[in-house]
Length: 422
Image 1 (cartoon, helix red, strand yellow):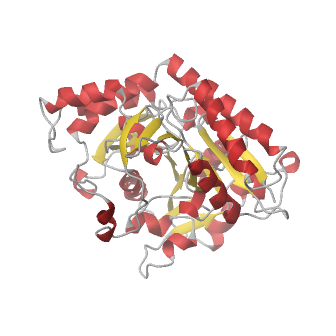
Image 2 (tube, helix red, strand yellow; image 1 turned 30 degrees about the vertical axis):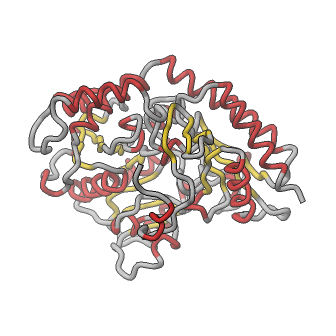
């Protein structure tokens, strides 16, 4: 086998010492034969886990026929993906653009569509919101750290407080919350925008930003707010979609329909690149030349997406996500009582976050980093929010996680927390 320890000499960024050689379901193995529980599903994208047999079979079959065709042409897999997405998504979303291959460019395409249709410019993004990693998406991200190193950014991002109840920007509590995190957006439009607002893009549950789950009624109120002002509401479901919340899409979980929805990451089940932008009928019109990428509508990826959509739509599959997610959430919340450093445990389905705090209740990236390392030492792969600089441990295991493995993860989480005791 080629490659090895010297590969670090060629890599642009730091690589770890571990080389993975095999994966199956929620587990991966390294060159030493060590087994890990992958609680971040690759990069939050392997909703069917590593090497799902149905995905592998679809890919092998498609390899024999047609690996790739330009998005100027129709293929059976891309036709079927669009049919399934319209069938399974919220009823108002009837058109599909497959000409992106990742979440960043899908989000950019959604913003372009909103700007094209409305003739307006600005984009509202919540604090901690992660739109993506391209130059345009970076300009919109809701964290200054992501924007600071780059001298030229797109104008027009309007950043507003997110519905982070554990650390409410407006110092409200659930029993007396006036949903200011929606109503006060009007102040930002009046005083901080250009006066020309095209869209708001929001993750129904934040991913990179710390697994913030909005309070009941927030997203409904937000949809009403946008409708009243002619603002296009975009749901970034790149992490929350395809069963992650125990429903096909988080829009369904929260009972709210966006005007546009983006879907990527888990769309192909086990790791092939493909992204979709779903829109209402009235938003059709932006010319295809305005947004398209070489590997968009990738035929091989579309074949994997077809079987993925057929799998995650099954009621028993989604029930399994809710069952394993419920066990893991309950077990993690039980640990909170024994470990004061656990400030909050939150999530829906198998999109969970554990917030680490200092004795005074302040955010603790220090403890989050230490816990992430302690979990890794126990062969549980997790991530720290805000690309490793936050204070929330992110858990996004493949959706094929069993109840038994959910319990095993919780056991090891408890062991790891013991290492943080003073």
